[in-house]
Image (cartoon, rainbow over all chains, first blue to last red; front, side, top):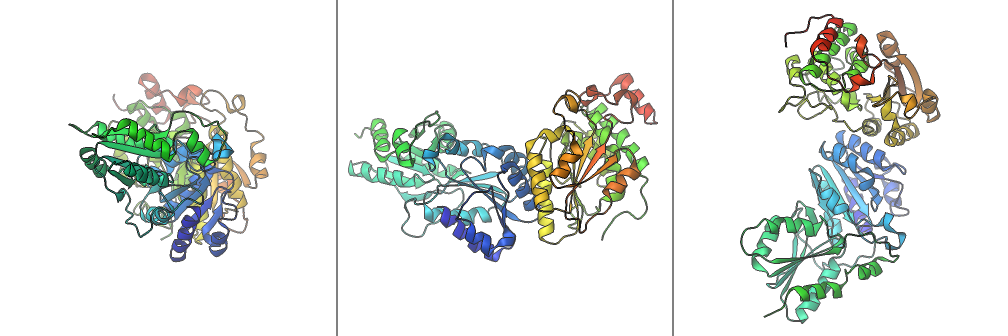
Length: 308
Length: 280
């Protein structure tokens, strides 16, 4: 995902001299080409995320579109108030890029697990929150946040995420991508765990269920129309995210469904339970420890939905 | 266009009007922070009367100098100087702190001509100013960026991140003014987190430092006068001030960081500023 984002930024920087990339002293090797091709548009702010975000706002208010770049929680939680007061409140064109959403940097420990970021940033007014599901979505999302006025948060993995979309996609901010339709279950996935959702769907279909799959790359503004439609047409909605079950995609979907009148689909929220991930392990291992594998999704669906 | 001022502004008179307005605003709004406003009234008068290139008829003019009040709690002073400089009607000041008003206690840019940045949480202004100065230098613009900070605010680490950055990038167009009244929220600065040797700290970080008497308009003018040039360093003006300056019983008092002037205190405050208080 990281390389797709950088490639897209290079394309954009070619035609827009006001596009700026500011790193918080991270991106070893990854940002080199950008920095050499566009030295005026590249800046290393040092290990100082509050200043990085504040100066990004200052530059944005002078007409720049500024991408801030760091990993894990550093570009978000470390400087949350700068994002809230300075970027969002001033509608500044600051695009916050997080490399390492979820357990991407699993073995590095909890400091590097970005597992509450979607909930926390989603709670801010005047921000767009996007977690693309695969490299194809990442390229589209990078362009989308560049074109979306105001402050945006782009939550990515790192590298090596499997490609899910084999053809072109229709990527629109705030509109989920419909991969499959199915009347029994709808799986809504956000972020780089989309491939798990995809595999779980295939397995459930084999067992006889009709399972839809939707990439909810935009967590804010959430695709309310889709959620309301699904709540009236399927029996079970499943949300899947590499993120706490509190306040992220599952929370956003629950907020909508809970306020709908009349009969509606059940909801199964799959994510990280409310705990710190102190077990050491890589992304795949931690997914297995915390119940985010294909098998986990299938068993959770099976437990909630008994076919007639 | 370079400057809206067609004749020299009487900055002493302007400072007095800022103080009168601010006392009235905090009286009618029953709001805090009058001591902090009185501390910077002369700085604001010199900035808007002599230094800043701004145009009240075109607040968004690209060539304007940028001014950020980082100590947002003294926003009443900025509202007052903007109104007195023609950015919006002075009558609007009476809405300060009122329900439904635009003029919040901490300075807001929403719908208020002349305010660049909303602040209130300390340690935000300088990083934003750094970004504005960096962008201006990058695009070869010739305006300056001024950030007015409090001394207590210098406890915030974000400022020192910005101070490092500004020196490293030789932001010659950036001016940080510290309102050094030596009293912060609960106690004197020296009893809270001492800043001394303060000037040496800024110098050691790579800034040019000037010290000024923050109530002497010639001293302030000398420190803040046009300095875009080959120095290659950002400028810090440590402005030695008195919290509550101009009203005897408010001077050097922590109490008037919080207290709103009411009743006899209000009338006495206005009297010290040379006017009889209007009837309550």
